[in-house]
Length: 282
Image (cartoon, rainbow, N blue to C red; front, side, top):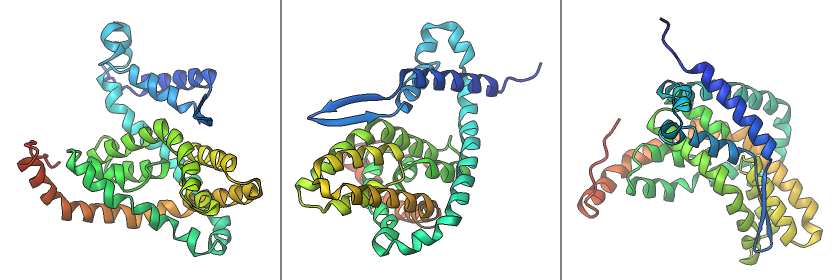
């Protein structure tokens, strides 16, 4: 008898969940007068989690047979396959737009360096709470589609690094839109220029960028609206074009080097001060 791989069931489940999510549509609500829109991905994530054999599978036996350990093991490999066409698309789109990148000026061109600076704080905090190598995958970038492709190709999405990247990806999809909806108006309140905030809105995530620019244009003077949209769109384009190379050749090697330098000291603090069990290396 041929061994079950789980590929067919994964594809059927993905198709059904995508159709259901599109039928439900995006989640829209207001918080403190700010319009927040969370894209349909939220429903796919929630329903995908519920399909786990450890959740609905426990109470619905046929579902546990349909989505079992075979499907759980197969899913990361199938996800990796879907990211390769995305990488090809980024490469094809980058070629004709090199001129725009070169004309954008140093502030926009160097924005990816700024994106990496969050790693200096996030990686030590991740290690301190015991994430281990998962903290490398979760903090070396904003962990959007390009990061999934890089980590999936280098380590595999079933690895500790892959788990960290997926965790940040899902957290960004769920909480990122809400966070950026409030961050842009807050930035104006504490004195940041609308153009700087518009540049910061193009961080490589369409949903987060839309949330940030919508909130920013609502809070900023009307005279800045056109420029805000232009700066955020250009910033998002540059992130798509240059981000994958910075993540691959600069951010990930830097995260690994940083991890090797600080992990021994942080492990000692966890064990001695917090009485935590030593983190096992893979």
